[in-house]
Length: 109
Image 1 (cartoon, rainbow, N blue to C red):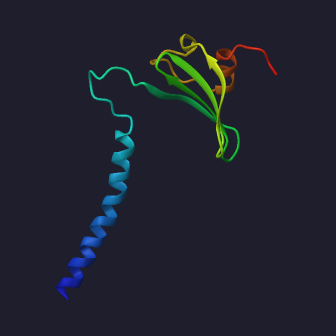
Image 2 (image 1 turned 180 degrees about the vertical axis):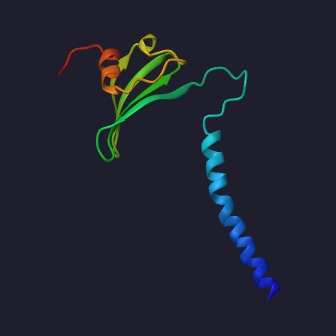
């Protein structure tokens, strides 16, 4: 009887730890040790266009790429000026479309 109670208690403990570990992994996902310098690649913004389609802005070293992402492929849509991004301390813009139009300058198809 004590063995069954101990097993149930351990099962409940493991089940209670799962959300804690998932939360911790999410918090540490963007962790960067001090003094390690800038990350070579970073997601700056994203906009969902459909259930599984989106437009994302990715900073790769000193380049800012605008990518179209679908379940089948990733397509380079444009390369934007990294200096046009708002500063890190600035509040995020609610209008991603306006930010995207301002960053991507080029002929329309």
